[in-house]
Image (cartoon, rainbow, N blue to C red; front, side):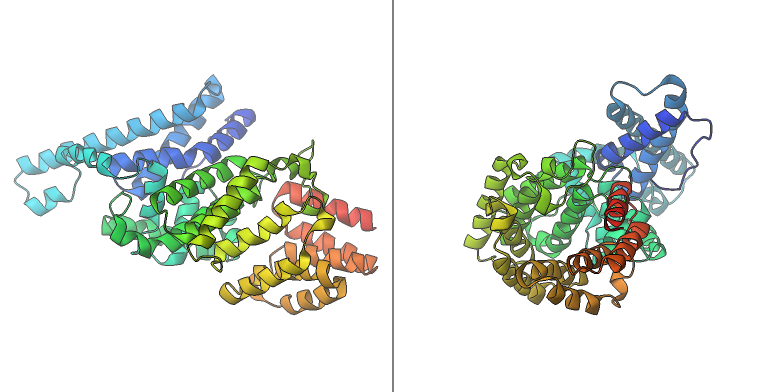
Length: 432
């Protein structure tokens, strides 16, 4: 949640938690719907946050309404209409005073409100998708597009986005502010681009959708390890893209990856909501329908010549796990081979770390530890808590228990998600 507005100090704590939860779930839909009215994503976010502040003022006294999302949506849209009326009235007054036409055109007029009907001509009637394509406009840098869309669509805080990007928080904060100012100054239209313009924005759209999915799959912060609503939003947007761009192999690769990963959702937490890692999951709880959908999308990607795409390769990795009836049946040698291919097209530190985990299963913990130790000085991994966690697991397997305990404790200190922190501290305790 943005720090633009101060929350009332006397708000009931239960109401505050409820409002925070509603904001996480509903903010993207509210911002997108308001953006369709005002045609300005920065203004839309401001109005949505105004509605959030109004909710803080009312819900702490009156209680949370039965349909809090609808309440926020109605309040934000009313604020948007009020803002349009104010601009229209101001423009008319300028005309009456004889101001020049350039000044009039710089404001929202009734004619502009009438132009909202043009939104019906878009070939996708989905406000969230419009919002993503708007935030991914070429006028912004690739990093700015991804950060802004995570903020607007995912409802993530600046800190959470920074962790998703493995970047300093001030850098992300500046990136988001500049991005919104740039979009407003350029008067970027709130629309899904036509076919000839989509290609230049598709890569960043796919990246953003997957980052949103990842935030839902393993929440960066908070008391829950997963935020399934974000996974569902990302999956829905990915499926829409696949329908819109049926010949784009990487779209199908991304959908395949998300479908197969989402199939594990029910098995990834125990009854207390604690994380359950892949080797320990009850595979009977994996969703066979999502697995089938994922494998079908993966085949579609391959038939289009995209088997070596970034998302298709990751989907192939997920498929290796999905096809194994038990953890022991996993083809780790194939997984290492797929990671080798992925390192050719996406040689990132996180991919290298994941490859090391696969190496540990194929060639033993010492071979993997040698790889992990070469990654420890990479700046992007300095604050990545899964690096000491992986190292701790390898040390434990090698019998170096005290070193493993220290690494688990260090990973727990770095983790921002409460469930992950509890899990890592529990591992440290078990080692001790």
